[in-house]
Image (cartoon, rainbow, N blue to C red):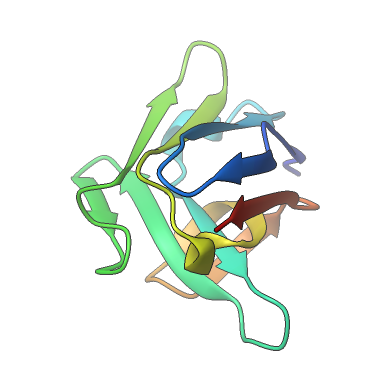
Length: 117
């Protein structure tokens, strides 16, 4: 069983930055593909970024602006978000044990990111 707790969301102006963190419990953290997803009001949840043993991948909409990283010693995964846009406004979820780019075994409760224009 893995529990995920996100933090770091908030309100920021267009062009600003935020750093999201996800703290995970469980001894098998290092073996899991980890990722971030987001869901804007009235829209479906969408893939943002993932990291696994083979590397990192990003949605086209955030490529070059967002960076995912992990610290297996601390059981954390972070999402550095730069050059934020109003369309980045969403509830951001941390996920563990990803299969592909849509399915995950474990989900956090989400942290809200709001980008004002």
